[in-house]
Image (cartoon, rainbow, N blue to C red):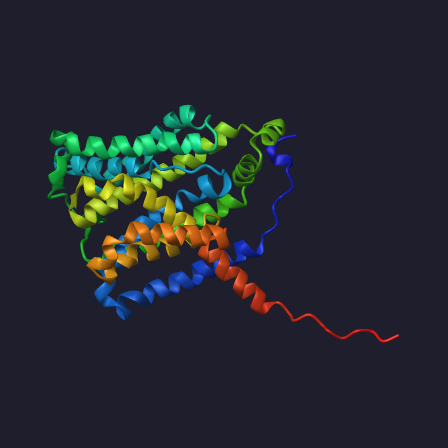
Length: 333
């Protein structure tokens, strides 16, 4: 038996909620710059981290593999974009696309070794990537600028138009985030998505069905790497600066926490997680200091009481409200 012979997955209520959420989110996104113009910088940052998070949903939500290596690919996307555009005068958009493809290929290479590991061993291996990335970005001064960071990175240019303002960056991220959400949502119900779900449920049984677990997990890992690289490039173009502080090990954990809090089986869940984690520091310096503690407590509560994430909890609550009340009438005999 092959993957193609597995019974097609029905479009679940969760998938319907995802598409509804995406539609509502797109409409809200168009209005946000006019409703809260003073918070555009926050919204751009949320959009960037959403890109870094959404690529993890196939790997975590379906394959059941937790990767802490997103900061590696963000660093390659950011520092690579700076080097290609500053030293070799590459067009900014071309640099971002090439680096995303490069990271996808690099993820396949790492995946050949790492994805044979199961459970927390894979998470520990990718944690090693995050630790190495943080150390290398600080020590490799000739390339990254060291602790001071890389400066004077040009803004993104598309079709002769410079994407410089917060509003322009926000709308670009809405488009790219929507495309990424559409891809991951369709992947969930595709043959590859069904294979990933089978691997995540029981890799041994999946192997008996003829599913090459390592190959499918490598595809998911490559998708996460490409979105992380794109997020890193856009962050560098937006800030026109990039430093090791943006890709610390704490940030690597935060990205996974964003996915877990919002929900790893929905395209809308990571957006909620990014809003929660990135929004708290905006409440003041005191709150910003306690972000790691806050994130840890929220993660404990969500994983204990809402294993489907906050978006899953919202969907369950809406479904419960729409469910008809049970009839209490009893037949009299």
